[in-house]
Image (cartoon, rainbow over all chains, first blue to last red; front, side, top):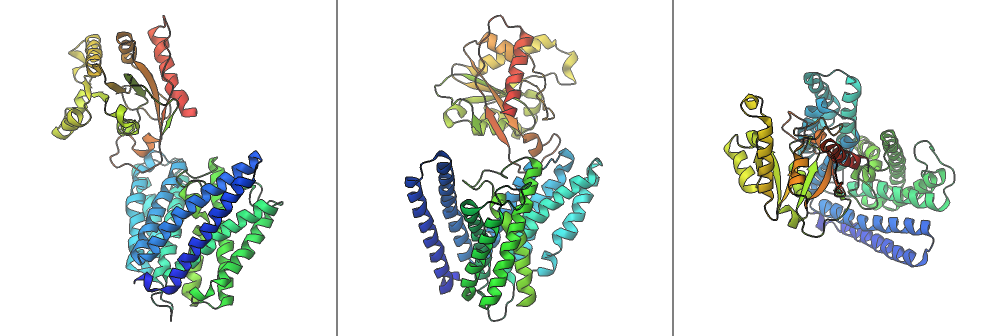
Length: 314
Length: 192
């Protein structure tokens, strides 16, 4: 599968580059214009985010362009880093060590091998059935029963979120959609662009007109105005990208709606986990964004749903 | 990795840290700026590092470790601990030479990682012997979770090395007061 034969994908990548150039230019202008200290902090953060977006977009473009294997490797790496951030924040102890070693070095790679082998039957149950059972078995063998369910559930949730859910994104490449053979990379592109830009739209709307917090105890920055404005923009974006998908414009709009809403919910849930642990970010790997898990939180819930909607209806 | 004060001039230093895993020394060593790293030698237990050819090679050739005898369970009756202590100090002074630095773990053994344990007195005698040394406290966070005692495969968790301000000299300080002050200097870095 040579992706550069695909004219549409080249146009899309050019579109992303144009978008980033615009964002960089706007950032430069803002830096000249904004003078208040709090405004400056926001502008600095925005510019740091844009710089990080360049790096992430280039990595994503290379992965998509190299065909299936590149995407599988990229998302496997993301899962590994996300799990690392998740486990660092979790109160695991020395009796959890062996279960964690298996999670990092066997379960995570195996899940992506299954994606690469396109073995849907096993891919979809390996973690929620066998890895979950295995984790409890390994914890029992370690011989510590205190807070047993809590410890098992923490590791299982880490695998579910950081590995299983994320692996649905590259799994889009193994779908068989009639009349769309060999073009699946654009489905992955559609998902990632809609979910990430939906985040950006929600952030921008929230900053500009956000007044009423949607879940004040979880995340004071998420507002009704940001949510609604962001969702509407994301649906418009998704609709305008219908020509790269196997969907007609109406279907593309509904898909984008599903992706954006699930993206919001995923972000909210992962914020609650951070609250519970008393931290603001999962890490500091990506400048301006926080950790890897902070960046992909909205993908977590959206990827499986988009995968299954596509698989069952197309 | 964080530095409280960037190490500028070439001074001889002793980096002293809490000890929670086998990875401790490697992490400190790898975190040091190249110029300082080249002159930093770990102080380690002879009984551990001389058992087996690979360990011996690593200790001698790669890390240039200063190996000292610690009271291994078997030989405690054979030698006077005091004499052994003096010999350890002599070896450390010899290991410092004219331009090298040392990395030491004054707790003497790996702790649980929750709290910094009591320090052995070697650090005190070493500083009395060589008062021009700069004593830098180092705190290692999360490494006991990366590789707990008794495990062999590390879990890739995010960990942190914090280098603190060098200790000030205090005249007429007792051994116990000094050791407690040094211990707290490491402990405090955890909260910062």
